[in-house]
Image 1 (cartoon, rainbow, N blue to C red):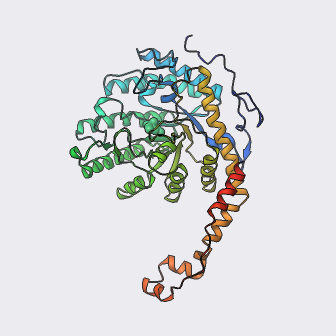
Image 2: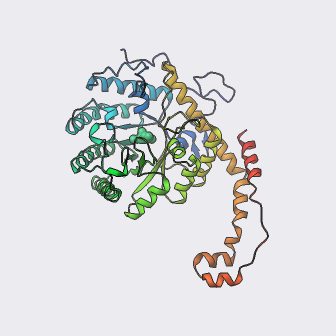
Image 3: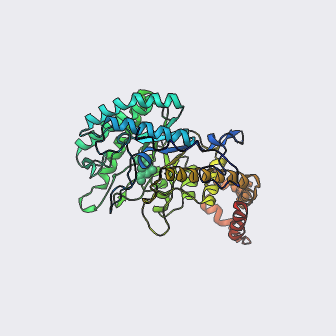
Length: 435
Ligand code: XUL
Ligand code: CO
């Protein structure tokens, strides 16, 4: 059949660090054990449907450039079935254990929310069968609340409650579908929950609507007994000029204000972190510090431009630093590394989709190995322990527990000897470990 565009590609294997075959792994050894867990279970990487199977390579200046025989323009149920075949063929050859999708990625095109719900129901059965046959699991499901023009002024934050109802219908359907498919998480990216101008926007009103929407989702999750984690995916802007889910700290403060912090955790996307003017490492470390870490969308931007280029991540040092935080916090739980990443528009060969994911997976595996080295050698942890040790003295603990007032502290204040922060020493050390 015409959709078998990957049939010439053999399953991707590990061939060792010196391997020169671009269609093989140099670092990712699925069954290799690290800290009592296989690499596969550490990384829990996932392929995303939208960039890899639902996108032709079109951008704001030009049309699709890719050969995707299942995207015929008809976008009917037959196309959805062809896409399903192609996607699972790809997942299997790559050795992926997880995938993610939006409602509109998987189903035939619909003209109304009602039709979309019907189309999702129609594709759910063959999808469930594919998952059973291949043992490939759903890392998370989500609803696309941003592409259809009805959402131009937001979904939950729309000034029109009719649109709020449409969003509710889509999430209702996708939450139940994710539950039926044993999805491990459910993601809510606030695609257009924000504004383009304050001249037509009431922030307070919109935040109340958003909180109400999220509370409804939490309520329904419990009603149907979905055990997966609900995740918000922070992003500062694009498509709107200001998105309410700006970054980790903003989202956590919002969740706390509406008493949702126990119910909703975060899906941190690397490229969104840099768009927010932070680093990917900062957002991950902050999520752990605020007890809000859930999962990761792994990609990167381009340092020369500020938008969401969603490129495959290829900086082993950054991954090693991120892995260190994940490992120190007990490793990935039901989250994973979802490749929310897309090919460059000129990468038109069938093997380009493999090469991109192979590089991304190898980068994660290498980061995992180096993250372990950074922990095992203890240099960073010993340094941190020493740096904060005085807080664990009797006096330090009395300050933290609130026993000492500002007045009492001011009586004993005296300038200590300054100590070095040793940043260059630490940076040189990390560079040496990464090699
Ligand atoms: C958009 C983005 C989305 C979410 C899912 O920037 O990252 O693809 O991951 O809606
Ligand atoms: Co994402």
